[in-house]
Amino acid sequence: MKRQKRFILQENEIPTQWYNIQAEMPHKPQPLLNPQTREPLTAADLAHIFPTACAEQELDTTHPWIDIPEPVLEKYKYYRSTPLVRAYALEEALETPAHIYFKNESVNPLGSHKINSALPQCYYAKMEGTTNVTTETGAGQWGAALSYAAKVFGIEAAVYQVKISMQQKPYRSLMMRTFGAAVTGSPSMSTRAGKDIITQNPTHSGSLGTAISEAIELATTTPNCKYTLGSVLTHVSIHQSIIGLEAEKQMAMTGEYPDTIIACFGGGSNFGGIAFPFMRHIFSGKRHIEFIAAEPDSCPKLTRGEFRYDFGDEAGYTPLLPMYSLGHHFKPANIHAGGLRYHGAGTVVSQLLKDGYMRGVDIPQLESFQAGVIFARTEGIIPAPESSHAIAATIREALRCKETGEEKVILFNLSGHGLIDMTAYDQYLNGDLQNYSLSDEDIRKNLDED
Image: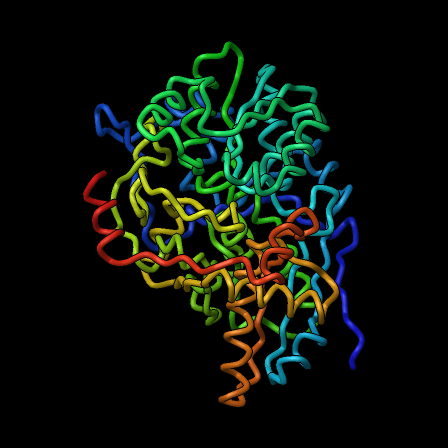
């Protein structure tokens, strides 16, 4: 067996700017709309909810490079660069001629890529005098990262966690509380949005859409409070571009270049983080790369959703977003990949998918856990259920190379570890998990209801 190879950048090689793909896309995303007037939103409109700098980045279609603030860069250096790893053991187990690399975002103290955006969002909030931030979280990776980042910059955090995920992953909510955050299961009786949802469906197990509604309501009704977001919107992908920018430098150290880049997909943060810096070379015609977003079979917005203007939350508090959606009232199955249980795709990703620069694949729950176990038994890392979707898509591509004899270079993003997801692995190993799928009729019915 060949020894695992890890490629790590020196401190002075860590990127000092983020990449903003909006500035270089051949077709810009359609604008976010005010749901009352149907007019395009301005940065000033968004700044009522988000930190001003995030609102400006969200709508910036001019500047491809954005300086990382020095205090944020200093915090990045606590854990960056993250390793790029050649997965020799996985290659040998699959008997594939493909060369498989993964960017290991699980090695930071928070256990996932989410801290890359939590730090700048809390920094920007602090710099404009905000004392409180609020957010939603599914599986809890974002909530944990936001709770820690808020404490780092001396502000208070309140987190609405999807109720079913809170039950499935109690230690994630405990992490948030350890960092000092107030954590509430969503839907709850603490907001008007939550009360309305529970009134309509007393047994509602929650979704990212319900949690977003409650977090935005809290932000807009609490003095000196701003809303922060872990995925979907463009400013989050801008912050996450640190992943792909590092990976590009690290791939140069290997002497190879990826033919295929894969990441799991919920709203688009880690996919955009690793894919967008590489995708700019596709726009210029310098490279040909295949980009694959791996979503759950039970939440197939990329492959079976409809491109439309839709709300990003269930109650309709957000701007109208142009995106591939299953409808904002979509109630996802209670799969363990809680971070992927979201009804829509981000506006940039939706435009890129529409233009044919990427594609989505649907991964059944059991296939994702099977892939996670294979990866754990070969590479020694237990992946988060979300990341296991990317691993499953990678294994599909690697086995295709085995059939054809093609020596592809495949890069995927290991967005987080699964050490707080062992209950899910216990259920899988005991045969207690099942697949969930949606019929075309179910999808159409939900879209028509919206």
